[in-house]
Image 1 (cartoon, rainbow, N blue to C red):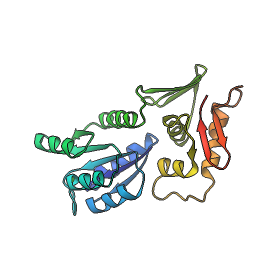
Image 2: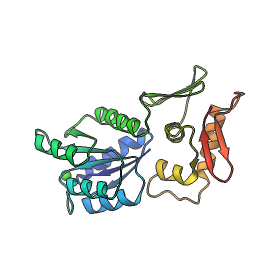
Image 3: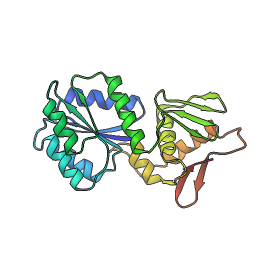
Length: 222
Ligand code: CA
């Protein structure tokens, strides 16, 4: 899942990016509202974390603009303490949730997960495909009741496939949602990671869950 952070406080923005990356998300940062608006309109983000007071274009204007452009990515607004009017204005402008600064990172993560679930129409924190279970809150994966250890990148790829289960995802979809701005689309890294995942998820099981759709991409299904 790919997240855009629009925040002009560099230390906070960079900490968020690092924390989200450690959780297996890919995250890009924009330090002002103009750059943030441009990135939101050109890249298919799964979620946007948006500050209100921003240089060049403020968060409310950015949000209004991207909603007008038809961008439906869930938006989590960062609001100042006690600014109730900001919360109301944010929600009325098309934000999906807000969190008050300073916030606890674990709370932000829980809100991020809830918004991503809502977007993916996945209601529970645990996604099941056959005997495969993906706990998106704890980042734990089990198949046939047995724990499977995945690296952060492998987990991110599996989670993306799981949020889109029973649908074909292309290599471009994967590269746009799993990797950040600097990712080189020519590299064969996606196939490499699919193979890593197959070795951990499907190897030794009669029923394969990760399928290649020739000329199209991959699908996770029973
Ligand atoms: Ca700010």
